[in-house]
Image (cartoon, rainbow, N blue to C red):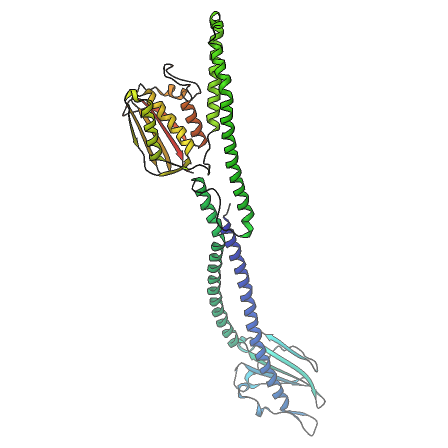
Length: 441
């Protein structure tokens, strides 16, 4: 879908272009109308001057005296012409050089302004025709002027105005894009704050936003609070459930050890197996339920600090084995839930410590993805056995203490974060090797 910024910019640019095109045509029409009005005023004055040159003779005939007419009407094809019609008899200006104009008939007391495209030498003409009655004679005076020079001037003005319009349009488009970017800046800031929320650096959207999107931001903040509240309620319920089930399960284990079952070993074995299965299922589901994801209520995970603490804890637990645990991790924060990362990395490291002979190595890289690699120098396993390890309750060596849930929980967390989990044999240490890759977004 096209971005909001592009849609707004495209719509505003289209509107500006339409407005400026219409304005340009309107201005062009106004310029021509003003020019022709000025020409019509001049033609009207010349028409009255021609009317004044008509005088009545003793025999009742009208005499036209062209002596007082402007010299432009005397010069051949000067662009200024007249035709005086008295009772249908026409007298043309010398400038016409016997060229006949296709004039529009005009009645007495009428006036008409019109265009002729076939003037002398194909000149476009503006013609003002006026009809009157003087001394009992019907008189029609038509005065014309060449529009070529005016058209040339109007064309020059048109191109100059077009260039000015394009400059103004460009400035207007630049200003409206700046204004659109400024108006959408709060949305960009909201996106940035949402990113900081996913990293655990803040819990709410605090940026000041326009009135139109305040309800949306308010609803997002309400949902964030609701998510945190439900997560806390879920974890509280998980804790309560764990405590509630602890005593009944312990009682079932004790019942299975009761002497009365000495005579029924198969029944005891079945009871112990089913009780242990229930215990493993409960542990697995409780651990899965505690996976929080990128919750803004939980602090981001500091790799070096947390791994150092885990190493110290595991060295205390396995102090009798004198394990060498090497950690290579950057001192930085990663945008993942701390509890989830401790659960996942803790299970991987604990599994490595259980199987290692002497060495455990943890390496973490942080770029486009978070990559966690854990290896040990134990017996290791082949690829098929490694794939079975993520099944709940599966252990390749029953002599190792535990319920077989560690790698299954790791697989659940990796799946939750849309990551990948790989098993194999370490090329360096020769034992079990596991690699986790989690995308940052």
